[in-house]
Amino acid sequence: MRVEYTWQVRTELRAIRDYIARDNPSAAQRVVRAIEAEIELLACFPWNGRKTDEQGVLGRTLSRYPYIVFYRVEADALIIVHVLHAARRHPGFQETALEFVPV
Image (tube, rainbow, N blue to C red; front, side):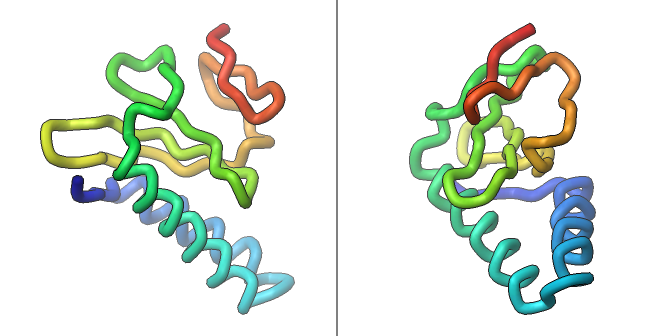
């Protein structure tokens, strides 16, 4: 299954990299590469995500870094719609123990 990033996700990944790069530029690159690698792995098991209150959007907390990937599964593609830090508040969700709990 191919992976497609929305323009919003590209902006979010740049913001993640830029934020981390303020303190550690090499770590910033490693974190973004790790996020992208986990997204590629997610494409192999797309139904492992949790349902969200947005129709057709699933969410998955990444294993190594505290980020949540929000995505849609289409016939032949995994469409990544957001990559956000788990500490941020997300409408319709409450993050507890790295799991989504519908509100």
